[in-house]
Image 1 (cartoon, rainbow, N blue to C red):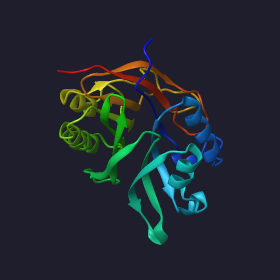
Image 2 (image 1 turned 180 degrees about the vertical axis):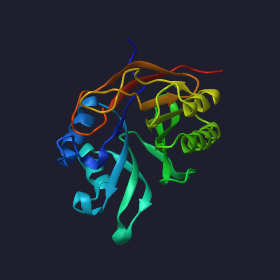
Image 3 (image 1 turned 135 degrees about the vertical axis):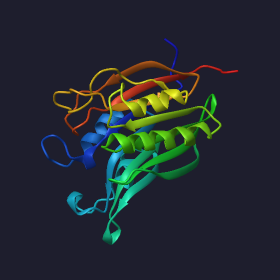
Image 4 (image 1 turned 90 degrees about the horizontal axis):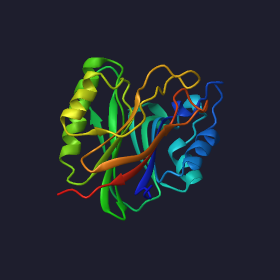
Length: 233
């Protein structure tokens, strides 16, 4: 098997609360570190929120994993409390951006990081779609537009709150994105019944290996994908 260009983990960490209801970022860090991923896409990350003892989770995760952080808060409360998506990488980071996605029930977002690989610059996007089907379709449409305009090979990872046969997946596939993740259920972590944590890529990406990790550190199972990139015309 060829060596992967990069390894990615996507993980809805549920602000570090495991199925035992204990908050432990150390467990999340252990799962991510053991995966060997150079890119980590985390959803439901708190920053200065009372329920997680006002911890700066993006900073703590970045320090523990020795990675650079791009945090995209989607909900903001008083006293600087934030909640949203976090993208970490050990690869050289060239640019980053955060987007707010359409919807209406709960604000959702998309985090973009451009990183340098041995094959050149690639873009990685981390997201968490909404709970309602109509808002997920709007979010998938906007996400597909952003990725189509990025101009480099791109990856999309996150909790899409929808199984592969759903309409938001149809929108992503119609935009040329290809599923690269696992085909097995990822939620709930103790007895997975639905497949809602996904990885997509633009033309040229290939999954050399993909697996979900049995872990009770969150209510979702993390998905790890080892990725190669074929040259495109």
